[in-house]
Length: 373
Image 1: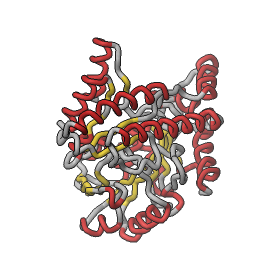
Image 2: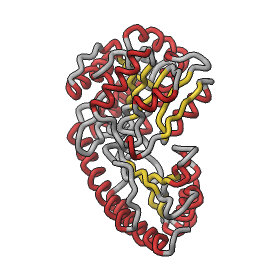
Image 3: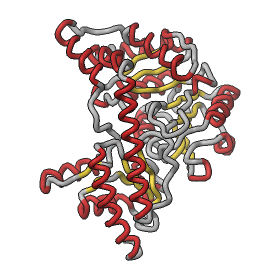
Image 4: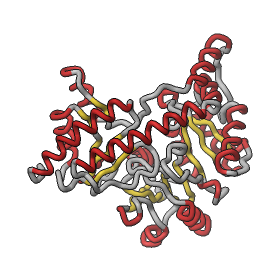
């Protein structure tokens, strides 16, 4: 957010900023979702819905699991939420007690840490690296000791790496065998470049899955997501939703239901992300930035730039000042080792990615030749 603020200040002064720092699709919600929302505004009072979400949307989400993963899911296990963020708050409150310890890989989406801290839960961060493709493993967990839960993300932010099917199955089995609560962040499902992502529900009915309409469905500002929870927890989540949020946005639920009929448009977005990914990978490698986490999915490149700097927060500000390209410092995602990493987001317009890649290629190559900062 500091980088976004700095980028906006530069844009106000000089009108020349390319945003690679934020993970927000450059496209609007799909046309079908917008049409449904307009119709609802004209014809529906849009009052409170039930706390768990509209039945039609819950049923459509359950059908999605059959269509996409071959999982036969009871719609009563689906909880529509105020975005994935609302889902995480409810999941952590429902599954854990004050003082419980939740393991998560590092680097990771920073809000995980902040939500856990706010709820007075302990976090055990697992230092991951290229040897495990920046994902936690059973070997990591066995080295930790007593835990109450595990949070995984696949595809992950900031790295874009995915857990392969066998790896996710192994982690799910480990958690079931030891009574650990498994929370699987799957909000980047649908945005993959090769093998499709797998859901934890393929391997465990005890897993809690978090998903959202923000990323693949390109509906960030609509603030609507969902959880899939074990049957025994449904009433708990219903009470939490009633008291914390009353219900998800009625208008957003209407739009989200229609978004499932926009696959062709949404898959076109993913094709563009893949092209952007190739452009940025090419230009970064030409600039000497070659140590990049395998970007299996999502729309990020997480790059080790220790040959250029040992302090990427200052480095990102310098890149912004000198080139007009805004990128995210790794310290947001990894308080221990992130000062040597940066994250590039490539979900914007392709012309912006082309221009940003050209600027970065020239600028970073110059720093590399001069021996870094």
